[in-house]
Amino acid sequence: MSRSTKNSLVEVRIPKKPEFLRVVRLLVSGYASRWPISIDEVENIKVAVSEACNTAIQDSCEEECEEQIAIKCWHEGNQLVFEIKDKSHKGKSQDDIGELHEERGLGMLLIKTLMDEVDSKFGPNKGAKITMKKNLRSA
Amino acid sequence: MDLMIDVKKEKGYTLISVNGEIDLYNAKELKDRVGYVCDDSPDGGDLIIDFKDVDYIDSTGLGIMIGIKRRIAESNGGLVLVLHSDRINKLFDITGLKNIFTITRSVDDAVAALKKG
Image (cartoon, rainbow over all chains, first blue to last red):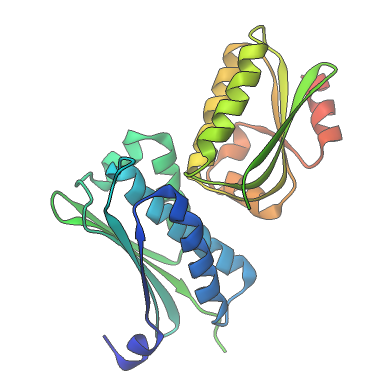
C-alpha cells in the first residue's frame, strides 16, 4: 500500500445487518465529498457501495447473525477506491447471485453502471470481495 | 429518514405516498402495506404510488416494485409511479424498469394516465 493510500485510508466494520446500511451510506458520502467530485457522482458511489453491502447481507445472514462486513475507502492516483469484504460469504458465485433473486441482479447492474471499474470475487470458503473505483475530476 | 407510507382511497384509485429511504432494511414494510391495499381491492383497483420525498431506493425496493407491478397486473388493475426526483428516475432508467412501468412526474399526470388506460 502506497504512502498516499495509507494517508487516505478509512476502514469501518459493520454488523452484517440491514439496519446498518444507512451508516455505510453516510460514511461513503462523507468520504467521497472530501474529494473533487460532483454531488451526482457522490450519489452514484453511495448507491453502489450500499448495493455491494446488500449482496453481503442477503448472502446468508439470519437475524442472530454476528458476522461483520469490512468497508475500506482510499484514494489512489486519480481514483477513489471502495472495497467491501465479507469473510463469511457462503460462496455463491456472481452468476448465482443474479439468478437467486431479481433484485440481486439489479444490484450488480447498478454497481457496474454507476462505478468506473468493478472487480468482484466470490468463492466457496473464500468469502466475497467487491472492489469499486471512481475516477476523480482532473484538476 | 425513516420510511413513511400514507394510504388514501380516492375516487377510482388508491394513492400511496411514500417518504424517506427505501432499502433492504425497510422495503418489506412497503411491500406489506401495498399488499394490504391489493387485498382490499381483489377485483383490480388502480394504484398510484407517489415517491413524494423518496431520496433513496435500492435494488430491494426496485425488486419489490416489480412484484407489485405483477400483482396488480394479475388482478387487471392499473399502476402508475410518480417519480419526482431525477436521481430515482435515473435508477429506473439504468435498470430498464422505465420500460415496464408507467411513470409520471405528478399525481395529476398519473390520474390522467390511469384514465387513458
